[in-house]
Length: 427
Image (tube, rainbow, N blue to C red; front, side, top):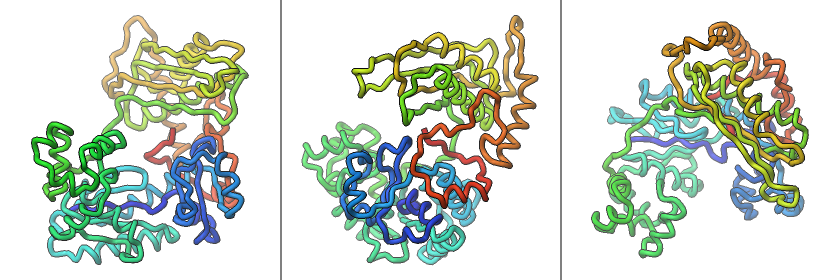
């Protein structure tokens, strides 16, 4: 059996750990630059506020119903994510888990045959709740990862029926009942386009897909569909996967206010390159290629439209913040044009090699050997005392996210807590 642990309304729940008076009140959390709703309390959902709702369109509704609106606190969510994952992983053997997203974790319960899984899962849930200021999670247990998704969907949808936050789908009857009631669009792996195609072919529920012949499934969905059907039958097709190193890394932002000052935009680009370098060092890699792009606001065409970017191959593979910031700046100088209002910029590094396998160009000076001890010292200090406490002189130290609605409670939290570097970034 597998289990899927999912944090309920995760960002909102994290907000409530800072301010307990938010309990039972409508709360929403906004995306980068306070643009769209990315998390809603159940009370906010009941008001008809959809996921992804543009905040400016719902200002009147927020005011009318007293909806509490917060900018996303990325550091806080990463902090609690790590805490949740650490507690949950302690209940299974090493590598018997898969971190699926910032608020989801698969657990492998094979070999737990003689355990009372309902009690065991409640213990996991209770420990997280007690250790993390009441942070709520739901756990769905089933023979496959796809069925775990469905079980978790059921327990979150029917909270009154499953007040313990745990549902175990362990019989053929339970699986069939779930498939008969589940909309085809809610099946894990079926996106919006495929969902529309399914409905055109008379497939409205998961059960309808379950009844289709394998030849039809293979024709419409390919081998992916055959695996999905087997998963729905309770035959595992998807194994737990450990996170692998990334093949490319990008740091980009849409700015809260359009930038017209060249120096300010250059500082943002160099900062993004430095963040890419930090990530490279974290996975013990170096990059051979660095790319930079800038673009204007595509929704403000009257201000003029411009976008450009290109890549360069580094003379030597590097993970030095100094080197990558230097090359990012040189690309920026080549693509920047005066007279435009810039809305977005980004830096990407690619073509990685392990830092122990760097091949040095005989005709180019290798400065990484001098820089890396400094970089490692900076990384260690920032890990201990907080992000960007030690930074290069070219960095302003300002937040790269636009967040106008941070609460006083969070400001106080940041003053009194050192948040470790997390496994997730929000870009």
